[in-house]
Length: 87
Image (cartoon, rainbow, N blue to C red; front, side, top):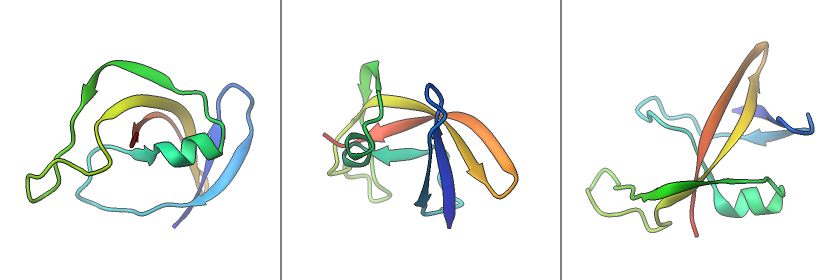
């Protein structure tokens, strides 16, 4: 599905394709994408290690940063903090 992301500090919006999974309880975004879009990240105090369904640690590594962002889908808007995975 297509959604829009808005940087809060400069109100610049970008349209991206997002994968929707009804079993996921957190939003994640790749470190590579955040670097490409030049997002300013917030470092978290302690890394969060992610396990896959098969209980093996995710190969992208732990979550070390987050990004506060506005998400738009059709007429819906939400301000949220997205975990950044990779690195």
